[in-house]
Image (tube, rainbow, N blue to C red; front, top):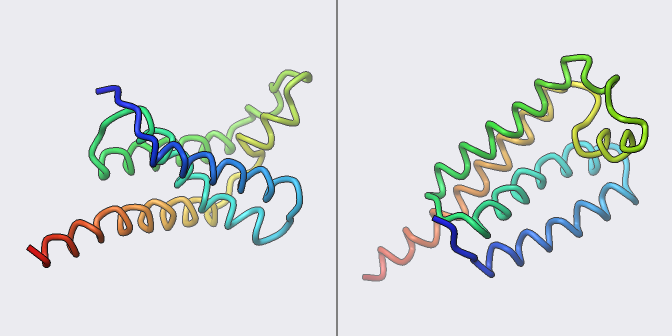
Length: 127
């Protein structure tokens, strides 16, 4: 089921560079909430770039991954990050659990699925 999709890959790249800018140059709500909202869309686009799956399956997989990473923050895992990679791992995996992050992930996937399904419904009406 591997199949490269340029459209999703370009979306992934755009979101990836947006996330880098958010991580480097912003703080507060934009970094912590908008960044979390966009990261699930980024992961969704990355998966859809290389694997042909239904939109719903991809959304569920992304949400499970995001929730797992967030719930791992309840553990003591961040104290075992290798010193060489501690900054990058803290940036990617985070350091503290937040219900707000779970809400942002969920809203990001809901938005993605609504966007994915909307064009199909409009197309069906014209037929």
